[in-house]
Length: 72
Image (cartoon, rainbow, N blue to C red; front, side):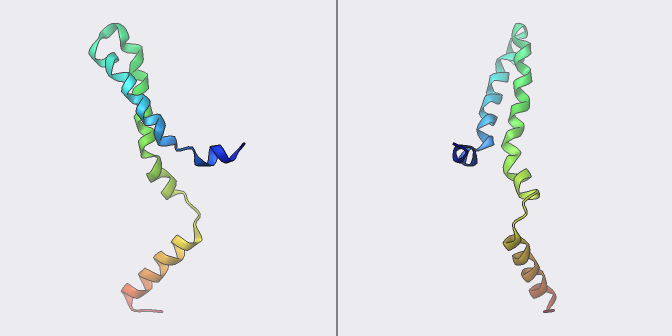
C-alpha cells in the first residue's frame, strides 16, 4: 500500500494553482486566490535536492572539488 506514496510526485499539486486565476479576474471569486500558494509545489525538486542525504552525491562533489584544486 505504501509503495504508492513513494511514487507520488508532490509537484502535481502545482497544477491546482491554476484554480486561483478566476479569483484574480473576477472579484466574487477572490477566495480562490488561496490556491495560488499551490504553485509553490513546483519548487519541490529543488527543496528535495537541498535536503537529500545521498552519500554518493556527496562523495562525487568531494571528488570533483579535489580534482579542481589538485589535491588528493
